View 1: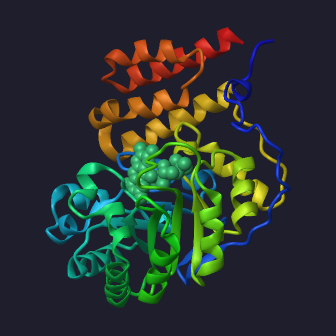
View 2 (view 1 turned 180 degrees about the horizontal axis):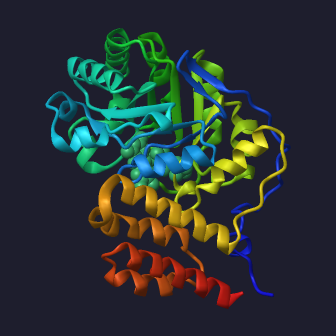
Length: 348
Ligand SMILES: Cc1cc2nc3c(=O)[nH]c(=O)nc-3n(C[C@H](O)[C@H](O)[C@H](O)COP(=O)(O)O)c2cc1C
């Protein structure tokens, strides 16, 4: 007997395991009950309808779209409207927008509300040069008065809850000031990724900054950064006292993380990690959802990165890379998945 898939992708944890944490739903509004309080993070070019649907089915209590440019929505340009493609079965769903002009953000919120979103989120955490150089994303953290004005304008424009996603600060932490400005402006919740803009993705998320924020504001606080299994989820809840957690990189190629955290929050035993057969089944389902939404041409281009995430750091990775060189049809994709799973089996 060799390694199971579970052993191939071990829990990334080296310390003491915190006690289980029971957490009720996080209520942001009548139509936005986050149950369980574990959220799929917004991720550009990742959190599209098929992935959101899969993660909801796996147990995420709320899913968030990729960030959409507010001005693009107002001009109803093709790309922005495609990103605003929401499906009733994924509710509750939050739409993340980015922008910096008060009137544009307010109008974009109205468009998002009309599209059927259960809440709207403002991106104030994106660290990318091309985003911050035009004053968007994390650049907003530098001007708390503007943050207040923006949230006032957004929350007065719509009935759905308005939330914001921030980093700990630009260079130094000023998360408390930013979140207090959001609260005064009418925000229902703040998600904080415990790194500054200067940190980019280096080091570990600073959980102290998150716990200070929890104590300093009366709105809901969502903790984000380095949650990749039920143990790191327990740690985020117990160290910070946050109301909900958000998972990004930890669910790439691992949508089961939501099932695992959801069960733990309900006090149930942790579900088994998937067998190789279970892995094949979920990957095939993800591909089918993709084809149903986007057709085979787009799927064959975009599904590669997801497939590589599923088999990352396993002996099947090399086999998969080779098989992915020429995929055009659904049968090609099926064959690539089958070859990768066979490589896993042969290695065990
Ligand atoms: C591929 C990718 C795309 C991302 N896109 C967005 C985005 O559109 N909006 C946003 O607020 N954060 C975005 N993020 C940041 C994540 O939502 C999250 O805050 C960050 O990765 C830290 O969480 P993690 O440690 O669970 O990955 C992105 C992250 C990744 C890896």
